[in-house]
Image (cartoon, rainbow over all chains, first blue to last red; front, top):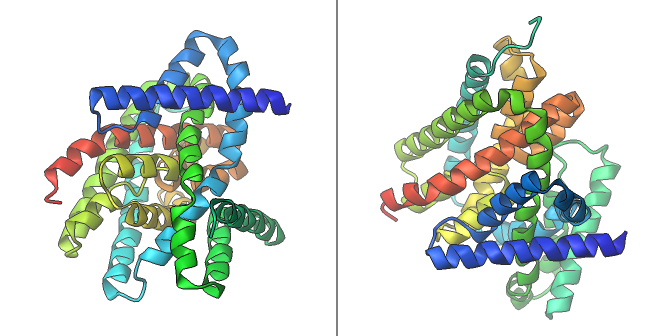
Length: 119
Length: 228
């Protein structure tokens, strides 16, 4: 179990490093991890057996995403000035933008996804 | 504070966050990330000021692992692309239209409210899941702190308002609900979609990842247009 998880994490790390190398070689503004994600998805669609090697490690990494985010959320809490009225104005704008974004996305989904049979 | 102590504090915060989430009935808005953040900030407040800077400087390993976790999103993407293959063209159009509308409406509202260009660039990532938003922000010299603020506010507001708004509009199809939850409320939306149905969760997952990919490719061009 642990060996398969470790092997999966090592493979994902290798794919990420390859993506980062590609981003650096192309001098790209798109992160290396995105190239890695796309390369990994393409490899799994082409070679379904690769999914079995990657799945235990990928499941572990996705479960641990909240842990990886803890230091970044702490930095956000420490660095952003929540006593500044401009911060709260920005939060209010974001809240309003969320409301119209949800309504618009709902309309797009209803218009553009084909109807289920019987609906 | 040493590297080991900083990592141990992050793990302590995460474990405490998971424990607190379970104690409070696993509500979608009781996220281990936020609960863990409060625990770590509380511990750092008890220590001296340099301890906070040391803590922030010594957690590079977790950020590297976060980038590896972005690659791991390929698994749910491939799993669910097969499930929703029959709707692929419609999905692509919804993600494109919603992504363009959300980004442009956010930019316009922030501009009208007089928010500075650096914050606008960061808030343009608000509908992208955290790991992808951080990767894009770091690569494009966008403030990661402000981007995280935008992502959190969006996730929390959207997960609360999606169902009341869509039901009022007469939208009850689980595919539509899931897709809107994934696009607008990212990871929190997937957690809520899982409570609706597995079909809603599949659409939410594809919506979240495709929106993240769309923004990863579009934001670098958008940032060049902003006077940062």
